[in-house]
Length: 42
Length: 153
Image (cartoon, rainbow over all chains, first blue to last red; front, side, top):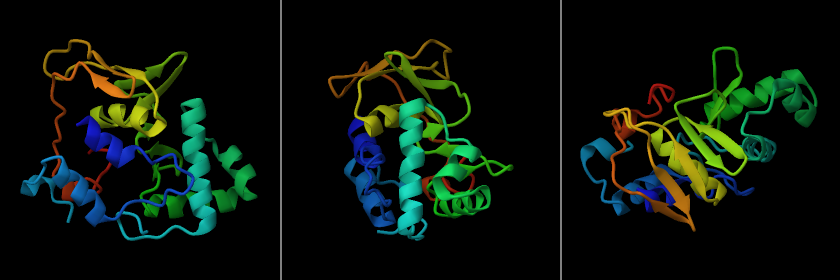
């Protein structure tokens, strides 16, 4: 959970932050082992 | 890069978004409308900008158009408090209580209760690592529906 949280939110305070794409976020979930249909973002 | 809902913030809105997040980080609270008005040159423009940020999922407004959330920060007290020294922030949910130390890159203690037992949560981030990792965070809403009602999520 912690590595996923850092990857998801760790750049939220960066001045250049402009959001993450759905594909990027999905890769983060997949990388954390969250691959079931429940975790599909679209 | 567009946000999750495909809306790309303009340069001014992106800068305002960052100022709002910075304000949460520094004070634990959302900037007030008068403060936002000072930043953008008036209350009408502040309200318009807030609605653009809301539509882009950069902030979440309540029914009055006031900032309620800038994920992972909550502008209203919740059951999930993050404490670092003499500073503290409210998180929107259990996951966000981990997200705040991640976003701020700080060590912190999570003050909350386990949903099933009511016992105090003993979670802490120290030296950049999550301690006391036994436990579960419950996600009740499928991921594709998180933004259908983000407050409920």
